[in-house]
Image (tube, rainbow, N blue to C red; front, side):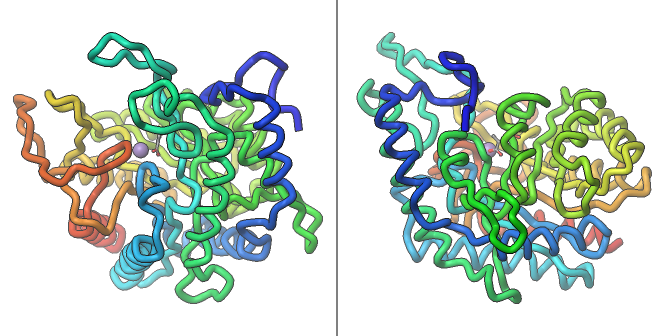
Length: 389
Ligand code: PEP
Ligand code: MN
């Protein structure tokens, strides 16, 4: 598959140093077993179709970025237990099914706003793009993209997926990640023998990030060509016309369960920006699921340079999301969270108005600040109560 005009790098793709090594790794991945089977992908589409019809909810959550060094059977079990427990909480509060979709088994790459960073020493290095691309250490050798890391991502994703039971239905947890690295994703496209459809075997659900969602861009074209359920992040700058083009391209058949839209507007903008988008999607006759990401629009930079997020802002965004969806008579599909079962301190209850640095003694995220176990449970409980009200 041709990804782009030769010599033109599609947005957010690494500058792989050796085309030959990349081609070799891609050929190897293309010949390897599918990490995710087609039946489980179809099963998730079926469960999401019920959410789209208003019969249940979707809970998507997990790390902002997974790190290779953290992959273990024990952490996978803890992450799976966390998302399952939160889905059960929603089910108990609302009396409706909740579909757990983890950010797991492939969330190894990150979009970045800059290609390079300047170190305090003055040295300029390529930025860290996630373990599937390069290493975080501030040295040129580590920061140089290495296609061999795609192979490692594949093997580790397989190990994580083996711990999910999405083939037996009850208790199934599905896997999702941002389909960012097109060299990885396209190498894992397979044909579903039952339907003849092409699907991407790297995860059950794949999403397109806020930075790569240009209609007609390579990420949207990739997603348009696979049968998986797909999602798109929508930031506060999303233009209704742009969204209409995305819906047409990604779900021309208006099939419930195919498309999920993930607004991440921020507490301050959700009620101003979301209505026009909801109205556009309604006018198109699209059954897309509306999933609120209350994390990415509420990120603040602390004086130390760390990113932080306040629960108070997340709750405000969730409430604003619910108000808008209800006003337009649309089903609030659920919530998308960055969270971990570990007792980290990366998010806080609220932030001081003056921007003072809160104490964050256990700050270990590889990228954005995550909710810890109790914070995630409080946020989901609050959301579920509001859903049930
Ligand atoms: C993310 O989900 O980690 C992310 C980068 O989100 P967005 O594309 O919405 O900025
Ligand atoms: Mn993030």
